[in-house]
Picture (cartoon, rainbow, N blue to C red):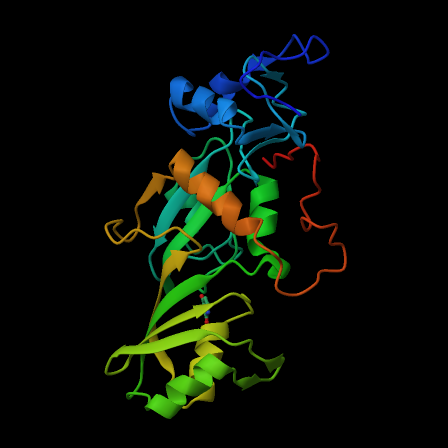
Length: 273
Ligand code: URA
């Protein structure tokens, strides 16, 4: 059995960067804390428990902490934007409207993870980490997204129950959701499907059209203090938490699933720029 506190075997690569340095740079913790994680057996490289002294090639090796892939390639960035209304969730808008990409630094080039309608406000992740983005948006992973919907009128308890149980939309019934009336006319709703204009259509279906829609949480990521139109970097812990959310057990089988979903295990991490 591998003892992570023992030095690397001579067969392990002598080139590359020290694992604790790579983990620290990815924001997992100080080098010392990263060493403790290695010694504690929490870190795997290409599926094998890593030992102290392990070196890794960040372009090829898959590094995981407690089963969650760690973004170890330098140059990967993760922004959390509070999208204001009137801004489109694309890199380029043919109609010349302001875009979310224009609200964050130009370099390196990033793209939005998923989509908010032009009229929707709230949290949006932008990154150049194509693999994480893919898994966060892939329906089979069903990462939760929470919204506050200000709706016309005030839904009854049975109307809110319909949101919870699923409503019939023109592209099929919605999956069970979490929905609560937090104040008259204000519904907190959590979905994991990410269908086009889903919350608006669900609220239309119960007869209470959305007047204002704000996304307040993406999986484990929330931030009440981030002002509309501003952004911040996600911390290493937040990126890791997102990775964990995106390796959660798929709720519906995906055709290409190989056990860990569309991000192939051991696959080289792709960087989109
Ligand atoms: N649901 C919607 O209706 N719109 C969004 O922007 C996001 C979720």
